[in-house]
Amino acid sequence: MSRINDIFVIGGGINGCGIARDAVGRGYTVALAEMNDFASGTSSGATKLIHGGLRYLEHYEFRLVRESLMEREILWAMAPHIIWPLRFVLPYHKGGIRPAWMIRLGLFLYDHLGGRKLLPPTAVLNMRTDPAAKPLKALFSKAFEYSDGWVDDARMVVLNARDAADKGALIMPRTRVVSARQENGVWTIETINTVTGKSERHQARMLINAAGPWVDHVIRSAFGQNEARHVRLVQGSHIIVRKKFEGPRAYFFQNPDNRIIFAIPYETDFTLIGTTDRDYTADPKDVKISEEETLYLCNAASEYFKEPVKPDDIVWTYSAVRPLFDDGASKAQEATRDYVLKIEGKQGEAPLLNVFGGKLTTYRRLSEHALEKIGEAIGVKGRPWTAGSHLPGGDFPVQGYEGVVGKLKSRYPFLTEPHARRLVRRYGTKAATLLGNAQKTEDLGRLFGSDLYEAEVRYLIKHEWARHAEDVLWRRTKDGLRLSKEQVRSLEEYMAAIPAQMAG
Ligand code: FAD
Image 1 (cartoon, rainbow, N blue to C red):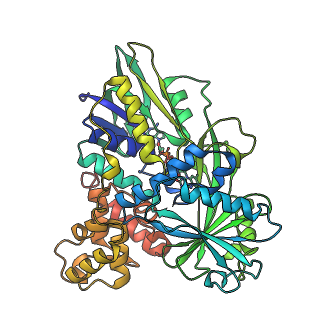
Image 2 (spheres, protein in one colour; image 1 turned 135 degrees about the vertical axis):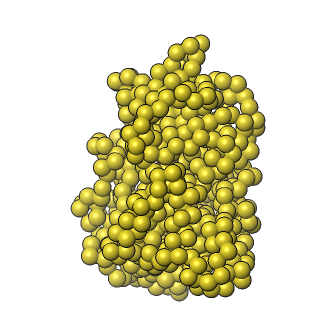
Image 3 (cartoon, rainbow, N blue to C red; image 1 turned 180 degrees about the horizontal axis):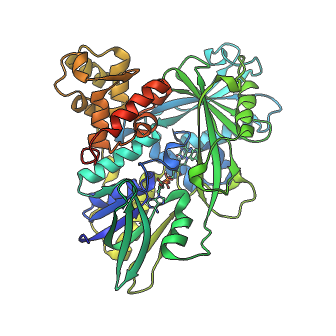
């Protein structure tokens, strides 16, 4: 058995990794176990917006919206490689489900509730003349355009894990927590390595259950509380099609059934369309888009775009479940998106903190709130520090992306423009670590497809715990969109041959 850590975190999604990073940076000793790959749960299946959540205003979630709005520019400054501003075009038509004054009021609050310094404010577009109208049917005379942010969700998770490890946390992917019991004020946690089958015991003064959609499952299976039912699982699915429109702006459509969908420029050549909202009761690991959801998204988008979206256009889909705190709302869309942190443990017992709900956008504040609870439970260490920090590779100014690309190209002149841009979007200033002393393209090793070279795969194995082709193709990067089946197979074979000790 290893030393007694201050904190043991269950779950390597955004919330678990965010809490681990914050805690270790304050001086706590921390261990984290993730049963699969980082972000293999909900945190790679989001719409990927760093957003206030315009529609949550309708449900009077002012606390959540204000906190989320304030976080937009803080997170952008923390990680300007993987987070950037996005303008949303919200077309308006007379007789729509929301009157213009209501949208105006919502956007006024959105602009003024707090935190907006660099993001441009709302504008009104004339849809008879504005280029934003070009891909759309001639249904609209007016649109509102407002700011939010975009994030590479899975990379944000792994960069939190990386930074936590760099600061001294013990980070264990592919490690499932099977039981946890507390005795004499200390937790003993049993884990199984899902690759080797090896069991281990860990000890900690406090346990954090950040298992996302599995949070109740962990309470039931690891702590034996068979009745636990705190979260409501709401499935959301997305489809990806070849690019449906030019330009950097995203669209936000309000459907007649009161639901909304986004159409967002994605990975240069694609359009991301989502999301749906429906209650889910099966095992979260089996979540998959249904035929009904596929048709719903295709039909809804085809109502607005001149060129219809057909199921045959779909190149990829993904689904995930939102682990929402169960506040008894009748409709999936109305369940609160806010998070709830609940401490358990009587005087003299080792405390447990259960994390329910949360968004990507609020993970940093959720972590700070968790650290307040941790401080109350086992004693305060350090101070809040993450607001002015950088995630690995994000140590450049928010407007500095072009400069980092320029520097990379002058140091590595053999890189093509798209390759240099992609590397900076993924790794920021760490792109140079990945490229090392390479002088020419051949120095990057084997090409697996698109511009995915051996050097990048090796970097991901060494620095970001990638072990399977899927980790590389669908979470660390989205090269899965560009590689053929044959190329995926050869990457799988390559990764399977990497010795376990190198793969961490
Ligand atoms: P997860 O990411 O699921 O992490 C929990 C982890 O715990 C998993 O990786 C799992 O493998 C691990 N685990 C479970 N049991 C064990 C165990 N026994 N041992 C070890 N590990 C275990 N938020 C936004 O801010 N913007 C958006 O645009 C947005 N869009 C969304 C769209 C959809 C369709 C969905 C579903 C969510 C969206 N969200 C969005 C919300 C956001 O994605 C989630 O709130 C967030 O990712 C939840 O993170 P988490 O860490 O709590 O859970």
